[in-house]
Length: 453
Ligand SMILES: [Zn+2]
Image (cartoon, rainbow, N blue to C red; front, side):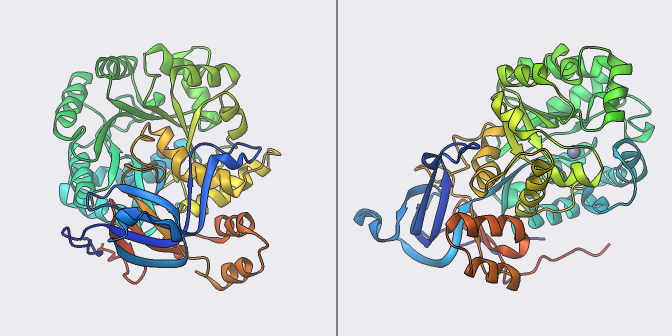
């Protein structure tokens, strides 16, 4: 499946020349200029161990690092690898499925596709295609839902390990009909817990892989399943947790009927599921009390604009979440989402916010797609920017990828205008190369090998 040959492991220090941009914190709505560093022209020095050794202006590489092999990306933009805070490896084949909103879309398209993942060979083929597509889109880290099948988790982590990618995932848990169909259900809470613990033992903190306990969402969960999830999550302080929340009004009404409670977030809170390293995809229909609770508990949100528009779910209020101090990452939510590209996702995020009289600057957009995502996944100490010692995952973007983008770039007055054009007009075509731990894992001179059906 791998189509990009990594650099030889013996290759030592490299110096990547190009325009380098990274973030130290959220630029906010006021465009805080101390939140980013832009080196134009710049250089990024990566050691033989795949970690960042230095970043700065092109002419100022420290002499003791000057023996690195030069790699010429001048005229291109080098940014940290994109972080996709929410998507489904099991939904490769249901992207672009017509005509339904969340609950009916799951039933009609998603669940039939997920049943095939009982087969490990199918899981491997799709996981490989999925990860190669992420690399081709400039995404180097993601938090991913596979299916209820253990094979889907094993296959996904094996393929991620083969590519040295920092990935989070965990077996999907669901046990309540009709929101979990009978042939995609955990047979019992005891079995769901045993399977989860077995997979944690096999994969959690193995290299760059992280286990995230993954109840699908409240409607497909019995109370005893959520109790188990909260108990295991609380028991293991270094365990991650991912699920969906408050995506669709019919779903919100269903949760109210099944669980009562003040709010959807309140239901998860009741079972001890909020806390550091817990992520709630969508969180559209939440109020200030929920935002305060998410912020205080250290819980995070994945904002998935293309999915929220495609499934007609609603508009996420980014400014309110950030004002409350909630960590927010950006997610494609494939296959509800319509593009693997974080650039295309930013383009739609801008429009979702415009409909709410909010603005998304290019600087804040690129922060969300890089360091913001790392913060939402609690990995800001390892990835997300080019501070010394960080893991050197990065993407090289081409300002001239399409004629429209090339022309718009040429007439731009300054860097931020250019960057906004890239965020609005760019997609996977703008990705020239993607590096993982300093190794080239994708180049646009190679095409993805799509496996036959
Ligand atoms: Zn999702």
